Length: 108
Length: 115
Figure 1 (cartoon, each protein chain N blue to C red):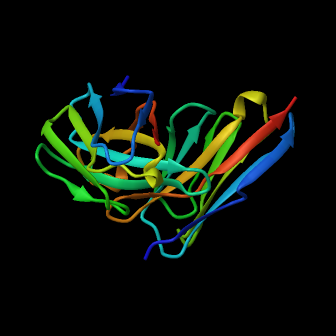
Figure 2: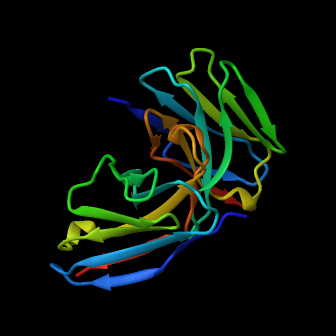
Figure 3: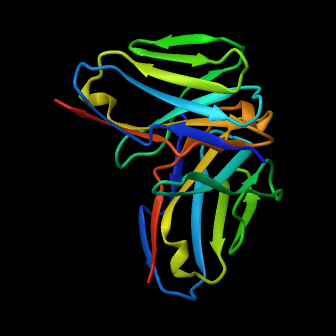
């Protein structure tokens, strides 16, 4: 069945450092979604990637879909304390399957 | 903005009780979902519904049932609560269309403790 691996599980960075989380699937995907969950909050949709090799940017966040459509990454440039939270990828089957998430902690 | 409202933020129940978790959305969404979230396990789908009175099992339906009598309301039922059902429960909704292609809008969650 569909397996989704998200790494790393935790990441602690100094404010201003970059951060990347990776999402890997065992099968080819038609699309992938990314969500952010702030501490004590609920997941909030960030973006959806559909095309092979697609790259999308939202301010300091860069999302990439692999050429083979089996993996994706989220990169944050120059992290800020407001970036703290858990980042989830979600991949499609007949329903969404969420990765286990990467928890980001940013130290000022 | 989509508003997904879960009836309780925190709930404490006893083993063996029948527990109802309620979720209401105000955007006329066809699709509604129930997840549980546990540390290290991410979000796991319990049940979902793509229309009134329709329901589909997710990945971990055992010990749960659902009810969708009205489009805006999706209820999760723990038939006989057990301690391993202590968790954060999240409700979500999305617009019509292929479920895996639509962004999901989440409620604030219900932290349920079973004693």
